[in-house]
Structure formats: structure tokens, C-alpha cells
Image 1 (tube, one colour):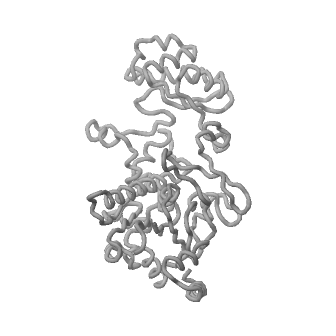
Image 2 (tube, rainbow, N blue to C red):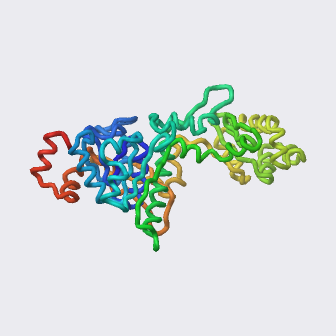
Image 3 (tube, rainbow, N blue to C red):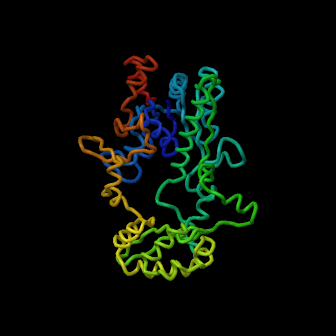
Length: 388
């Protein structure tokens, strides 16, 4: 697989596939993928890069130069998959569009990620995840009703698009290679806003049939009660999901409100929705008297779904994460670094991190020598001219 993308969505798709065993040759500009410089940086590379670049063979090619594009084309003709996340039309301008690639490599799966897809009136817009999260509908329902829409402190749209792209790639390969399959490749067109929209549950049919526009509701889930975040005596919060009929009864008894547990008005979700303020007030009054760990312990004993919103510190110290193998320790410049394992877990062919994201251009000479037969003199010339 050849990865031509940079920053987040394309590299995340490549990271997922590489973690599960795909050979991924990542092409970076001579200055490196910009994500190398984002957020927390150590020894010239970000912690994020060490995760996104794992298991990849990293080469540098200047795709703005004709010779750099020619080398990329030759590599693309030798692989099963190309992943890219440039603005639509960029590959075509570079002579790397799907028609030309298919002439030489008819089985190629070309996975294209962009903000708004390869066609349509918004196709040429810049595909920033923040904007696509807004237009995809997520930002409208995220936050509190009396404030501006919020976002998680993550590039959620990019990661969702990367997952959709990886899934689309596997589906296209299955279609190509299954018994009686076409043996032909295809284009996988992944739009960030569509990956976000794919997560929007029933917001469209609810509006289409009933005229209901789902709005921001803060910590609660509209139409499902109780499901909210509640402040505790130590300043922390707990998230409680007590929306099953029998679960609600156990929750209210644990909270010392047997009267509400046995109230016939609240025996179904519809009744609880109608009396949500009363239920939330009772739970808020109870959690405010106890520290978060005590609330959690009492509700776990009552078999009520509950959890504290975990920080990175909480995650790193949690025994369940460790027992499930969700941390992988790798060596980076002689020091150990914890990287998050990827999901899902496969029983027979589990993924793993073979190496963290390597240094810029670490595999350029080896890949171009092995795949394209370039000798040392040619590689030295390309390096002097800034092509690699």
C-alpha cells in the first residue's frame, strides 16, 4: 500500500491497515508530514506522529517536482492500494489520477479522502475536520443549548474518515479478490462530512417524518432518561446511564429515593422523559453529597452503568485497559513510549506495533532501491536535487 496523504485522515487509515499487517509505504514531502510538529514534540517528532506513523516505511518525495511525481507513479503501479487525502483534482493535476493509474495497474484500489467528496458543489472546498464536523451535523448537537456549539479536543472528523476509508479499502479488496470477483480495482470516495453524518443516528428521519430537530442538550441524551453527567462532592463528575426500566429502580434505591423507584409515573422511559427535571434534581442532590469514587462504587454494586470521565492519567492507571492490552510500549531513541493499541481485537490475526513512527525519510533509499531498482548514484543525485 502507498500512502500519499498527510496530516490526519489519510495517515490514520494507513495506520489502521498497517497495525493489522498491511505493508504501508508512506510518502512525505522532504520537510516531513506536518503532524510531526503538532502538539507535544520530543526529539523533533510529535507523540502523535509516533502513533500515526507506526509500522510504516517512510520515504520522502517532492510531489511538486516532475521527477518526484514520476517516482510516485511507478510505486503506485506496483501496489494494491493507494490512499490519498489531497483536495479533489490534485492527483489529476499531478498525472496520478485514477484513469492513468488504472491503465498500468487495473487492480488498484484508490482510496480518496477529502472534506466533501470528489464531486458535488462543495468538492473544491478545503476539507478541515472542524468544518466538516459542523456541516456533518455533529457540532449542532454538541454542547449546551445556551452556548456556542463545542467540540471535543480531538480531530474527531479526521479519525472517523480514516476508519471509514480503511473499511472501504478492505471492502474494495474483498470485492476484487473474492472467488468470482471482478479482479478490478475501484475508487473509494470517503468524505469527512459524510463520515460524520454516518454517526448522526436518526436525526434525519426524525426531521423528515416528525419535523423534530435534535438540539444541544449538554450532558444529557435527549429522549433517554436518566442519562447525564452529575457533579460530585469532590468536584469530579460521574456519568450515569439509568435509562432501563429495572436499572432505574436500582439506581433510585441506591440513591436513597425508593419513592421515585416505585413511582408509577416513572416506570417507563416515556414517563421519565416527561419528568426529567425531577429525576435529574434528585440524582444531582445525591451525587453532590459523595465523592465520585463512592458514587461509582455504590452504583457498580447496584449494577447500574456508571463511570467517571477519564483523563489520560486515569486511562494510563486503569487496570482494565492494561488487562485488555490497550497499551503498547515501544522504543523511541532508547526510551520507552506507550502507544494506544488499536481496535477491534481479532482472535486469530491480531494487530501489533512493530515500530513507532520512524524518522523522516528513514526508508527512502531502501524502498526506492528495492522497488524501483535505483542505484546509489541515482539516489545520491535525487537527494542533491531535493527530489527525495
